[in-house]
Image (cartoon, rainbow, N blue to C red):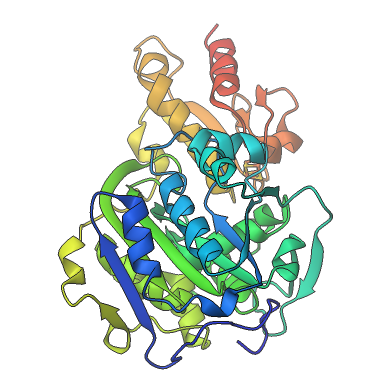
Length: 397
Ligand code: SF4
């Protein structure tokens, strides 16, 4: 990649016909070891390797939200065996403590057993880097480790995503953006003359400079429906490994039953030459890899459709706010809004793009703070379910 800000690629890669390896079975450690066994890891000997899982949310193992700890355990062991110095790093979504996230998902336990350091990539100042061919964004602020480590390995969970279709190895690198700069990608104005959302274009922009050296997609327990955090866990029992992150994601999409060309950030990135997504050009092994294929449920198009007694005003919110609101509605919506003696349609607003709102609107999340005057307001970025519940209890008093 000519514009990559990372150290040079240490692995062999046929850029026109990349290889991707799929391993399936009930043991995620064994699947990961087997799939990684197809890649010659010897060039990492003596090098510093950063494993970047998806541990951006404080979520328990088995929910399909965070990378399975046994996948991380196998990756640590494989790279150590190859002679690398290995660390695991994450920059979680706003409001989540990195160590708490690592602990809850089980990654801390397997890393500690192996004396593998865990890095809170937000603790040092971020570094701004240019995106020479950027369309939606011209620069990004990255966590410093991204520039320092010799090898960056993206290890996401196989998940649907309400805004980007899927979130896999390419999109997982957004977790290398420093602190709140991740949110900036959700707040971009529409790009004139482009049909794609600015978020999708921005992720393709990001990928033009920030593409992992190796991708390990964890499909042990993925997530369908309203990912990345409010969907339904889906067990596949697969791990997908490849040097070309786009090719790896394309194979993962196929295993999820999602046409990869329907995923704008992958299509746009591939069109710019960041990688290959045409399955006819990807050498996937073993030959029967499609046996593991399932059909992941797509995310719903509109949250408010599911809650007829609630009107959700959503203007440029990000997935964290939507997920909090959805979890709240799932947990408490029926009790609060199903009652016939409630106040009719309850307006709830999320996102930063509101010019005006009905006076009785409950404003949820820091982005709505500007319109809080005279309204119930739930602070937080993202807001938490218990605080939304308190505000609604107040509303119905
Ligand atoms: S308040 Fe909500 S929409 Fe705004 S940045 Fe935070 S999580 Fe995103």
